[in-house]
Image (cartoon, rainbow, N blue to C red; front, side):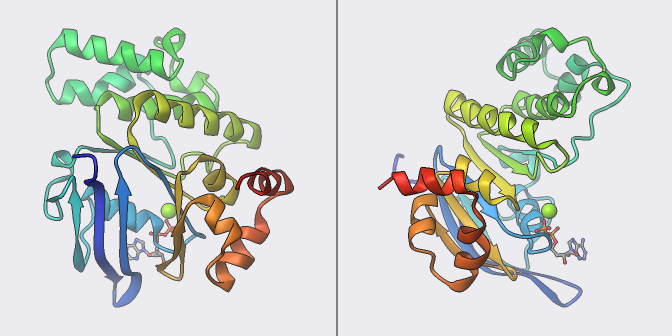
Length: 253
Ligand SMILES: Nc1ncnc2c1ncn2[C@@H]1O[C@H](COP(=O)(O)OP(=O)(O)O)[C@@H](O)[C@H]1O
Ligand SMILES: [Mg+2]
C-alpha cells in the first residue's frame, strides 16, 4: 500500500476549439503529499483540476488513484473534493446549513450530518459562527466555511483552486498556515493551484511548475530554488521569490 502513488496522471492532453490547453501532462502524487500547481493565469491549471475531479474530460491520457484507473469515473465516485476560487456560499443560509447542504442532499442520517458538520466547524475554528450568515463574516472566514463544506464530504484528496485569490495579503498569510496545519491534522493528500510563488514555496512538499500548457519542472521547493531546470523557472519563479522566502531556502540544505 505504502509505495502506491495516490494519484498518477499519465499523458493528459486537452484542446478547446483546436487550441492546445494542456500538453503531455504526467505526474505522480504520493499519499499525504501537499502539491502545488504553480503557473500564471491561463496556463491551464483550472482545466487540469477539472479533469482530475471529473467535471471535464481530457482528449487523451489516464488518471489512476491508488493504482486504479478512474479516468472515466463520475466526480462523485472519485473521493475528491474541490475548494473553489470564489467560495459561492448560499447567502441566505447560516454557516451550519451551508456546510450541511451537500450532506442533506446525500440523504445521510440526521445524527451523522450533525456530527460531521459540528466536527468540521470545530476543525476550521468556526464553531461559534455556526448560526451566522456568510455575508456577516470576513473573506477569510467565508473561505474557511468553503473549506469546511468540502471537508464535510470526507474526500480523501482535497483540491484547491486559488482559494485565496480574493483575499487581502494578511488574511492570505494566516490562511496559508491554517491550511498547512489542517493538512497535518487530517493527513490528507492536497493539490493546491496557485499563481503565487510564495504560497507554493511556503506550503508545498513538491511544486508542479507550469508554463505554456505544460510542466516545466516538478520538484521540492528547495530543489527548484537551487536547481531551476530552465530559464523560465529561473526568471519567473526563483527570481520572483521575496527576500524572506529566499533566506529560508538558503538556510536549508
Ligand atoms: N470551457 C472552455 N472553453 C474554451 N476555452 C476554455 C474553456 N475553459 C478554459 N478555456 C481556456 O483555456 C485556457 C486555460 O484556462 P484555465 O484552465 O482556466 O487556466 P488557469 O486556471 O491556469 O488560469 C485559457 O486560455 C482559457 O481561456
Ligand atoms: Mg484558474
